[in-house]
Image 1 (cartoon, rainbow, N blue to C red):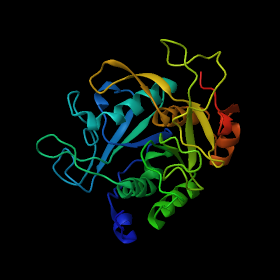
Image 2 (cartoon, rainbow, N blue to C red):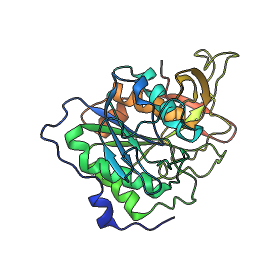
Image 3 (cartoon, helix red, strand yellow):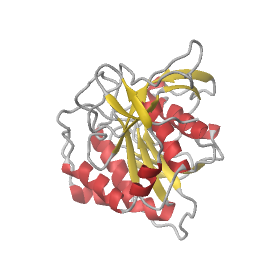
Amino acid sequence: MRKLLALVLLLVGVSFPAQANTTPTVAIIDVGFNASLFPNNVVTEVCIVSNAACPNGQRFQEGVGAASVSANALPAFAHGTTMLSILTSVNPDAKVVLVRVLGMNTNGRAGAYTIDDITKALVWIVNNSSRLNIKAVSVSQGRVNAPCRATPELTGAVSSLKKQEVAVIASTGNEKNRTNIAVPSCIDDVVSVGATDNPLAGSAWDKNATPTIALYSNGSATTDFYTNGRFFHTAQNGSRQFAVGTSNATAAFAGWWMKNLKSTINETYASITTTTASNQWLTGRYVFIP
């Protein structure tokens, strides 16, 4: 993992428009989005990459089209549209800030990104959360680096957001790990989300089934919440598709968090109604999202 300079991070993409946004928003950090499919939800777009380029050919871009990819972009760019679709299916009124961290080469292929690029995105949110009224961040990216080997820059960005009452919500990962969860979800100040899997044949989920922590879901004693990881969604090309994973659970939970938003992170956290889900290795708080 590349070492980042804190000074550089603090200067990335800072901008100061004349008028602040008054509606609470949620930021999604991901690889790219077909924003045209969700015109009523997207407030603004940002691209912050360290490899390849944003649509403007540079390493930073803000404004319409900055985080966007086309309907026929390669599958490497598809994940973000799925997250945006799931979050807005849970919360159709959500106002969203799209933060793209995956650049595109001139041949249309994806560049590369690491957890340090997620850090840069979080630092941008630290610097812009007030004027965009960002109240939560959904991060369905990361990997297990036991025992939670997060850089000081990453933990510092999360800590700064918590002080601003901006919740960072991140997925635990899909590696079947029953002891460790992914960075950044393993950071103490992050709200970590794992997945449940209670399928009914031909359906995304069965509301009458006993919630069971998915066998693929990472989880540990520190995991904050588990919720449904099975969703039909609008794909990058506009078609209706089906996906499973802790990424889905995280996007859904972020939408639900915004529906239950209170004045502080602690108040919102306490307001989330839970029951219990388990499997043969894990037990945790289950959130039923209608």
